[in-house]
Amino acid sequence: MDLGNLKPAKGSVHKAGKTVGRGQGSGKGGTATRGHKGAKSRSGYSKKIGFEGGQMPLQRRVPKFGFTNINRKEYRGINLDTLQQLADNGTIAKEVTVEQLVSLRLAHKNDLVKILGRGELKAPLKITAHKFTATAKAAIEAAGGEAISL
Image (cartoon, rainbow, N blue to C red; front, side, top):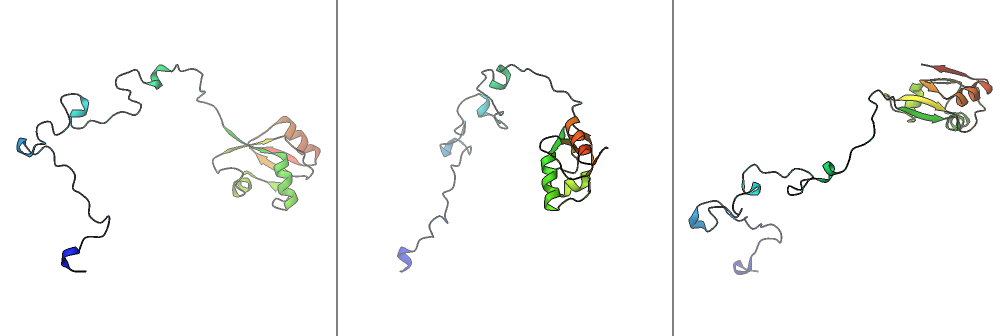
């Protein structure tokens, strides 16, 4: 190795980009490789998402339909078989609250909780939730428990 064959490490040197828009003498002046006229030749141009070159975009061609109720309440459903499994594991004892369900990661802290009637419940639990289905309420009371709505 001597001074004649030294070269920088591979990938450490980047070729400078094309210098454009620095006068006619540079060979890349005038339109600065942007062509003539049109949106793309102007400064500040940015293509909108979904732009199709002036053709009516897909999101405007496709018809809108349906109805969204702004007053809809979304509930986090928890089934009886899940509660029975937790009772079998010893995770929950006699009382079940929304806070316990949040700590067990069955619901988030801002969720409304609804107890659903899938499966069967044998443990006599005192369950506090926002809503109960009729079958869930009947099953809880049949098992000797109590269903308390918030």
